[in-house]
Amino acid sequence: MTTPTGPTVGAGDIVPIPSYEPSPRPRQREFLPWYRPRKQYVRRRQWLAEARHILSRRDAASEGSAFRYLGLPGRDLLDVRYLHDRLCVPEQTPLQFLGFDESAKPESKHQTSFNVSLDEVMRLPRVLRDSEVRPENIRILANSNSSAWQSAVKRGPYDLINLDLCTEFITDSPTMDLSLYNAIKKLFALQQRRLAPWSLLLTARVGTSGVDPDAWELLAANLNATAVKCAELNPAATEAFGIALEDTTEMTDWDGQRIFQVSTLALCLWVAQQAIDINCEVKVASSYAYKIGNLAEYCNIVSIAFRFKPIVGATPDKIGLANVATSLLDICATTQPLPQRIAETCDVDELLIDNAELRNQLIDETAELLRHARYDPDSYRKWVTMDSGLEAEIPVGS
Image (cartoon, rainbow, N blue to C red; front, side, top):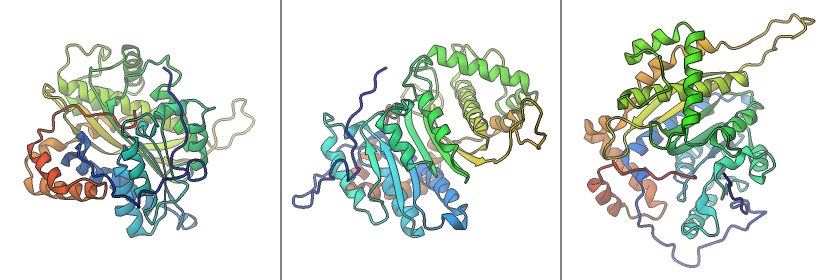
């Protein structure tokens, strides 16, 4: 797979940020799938909650320093606007962000809209001027020689990484150089420089659509091997899911619930192993899910918040000359709680069906957020009232 690179967008010393003040700003009209109330619920209950959690655990030496954020902001930069208004303004904290979105490409039909949004965001009082949105797919981070990777290193490590994919997580072949897995692995290596807690938000589709068979075979084999190694994992999965972790390489006969649960567990296990590789404790702080596609029988989008706590400790001396106590993390203790956490995943669609008051609050919040991005709030309310919420979502920053 070849991922095109392009000029940096958003760094004032490289590409000047255009001003649109002399002429009226174009009003947005097209409402996108992630403008539904359920997405705002995830923004509020998970994304903002994690940002506040990380900020609240800063030590005195970090007070006043920028909140560092890496994400896939989309052409309207809604997540950056939301973090700025709900976190950085009330906490009087500077915001430095690095984003990846192909709307920033010169040939993109959305570039004009993106440029206006970027100009608006860069003028926000708490946003630092060296924040940046790059026009590449985030997979470019797998290339250590890319300017994108150098930009990530320059601004990292990060308080919060938000990978709002909305596509199948395991769509790439493991043989690809510029794969999503390699990009995430590189981000973990970058985060190894961080001594304070941090969080990863991961939103992805889980299921059979678009799954690379070789990638799934590796994840499933890893899950089975861990279940053999860790005696408590299989009973935990049986109690939480009502199924045993046996023969998880074949999905064809599974129902939607089993696909969701086992796929999500395999994904969480892989993330946990990356954390242990950089000597971080990890836990799932929250998990939300919803359904896309009119034929979906069960939730097929999951949004997970992972919390990481770096552990500073020695590794074993391979020749035995040093006998200092080591602090190796236990994969079995780390993974044993995962099935129950996944079983407790909140179905946001069901929640909002049963709570009209909450849904209306979320519609109002989204309408206000979109107003700042030049959308008409009344048109949005009309759209969301008619919208079924089941159409396929469009990937962000892919």
